[in-house]
Image (cartoon, rainbow, N blue to C red):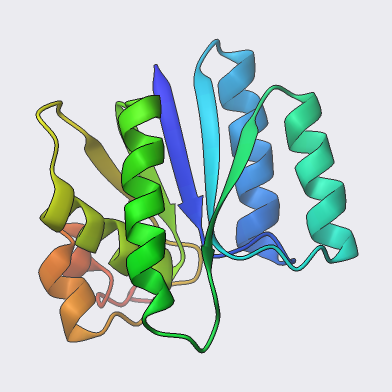
Length: 152
């Protein structure tokens, strides 16, 4: 199975460490795994180190080159994402973190291809606040269960 993960960046944090571990285990199970980084690379020590570990494990890490603070750069990122996903043709796209949920939801809304892509949303910090556009673009029951609180 071809699995494509999308995350804002690989600078540091729990979501990135979890994603690296998950991707390596998926490769061990025989899956073809790709990681798309939404933000332009800043070559921080953690990002360089974790990218090298992922590449060594056979996981391609690709950049979509969104520039932080430049809202219209997301249009170029959508175009680049479209070219990459047409080439990769993933069966599953797994988004991590709120901006990535919005981005891939927008991509799937605009560029839905003829093949069936399953979108999996990983919540790393519950409750994860989603704005109205993200809730409208993500077609999953999770958008409503995110706000549920566990009873103690």
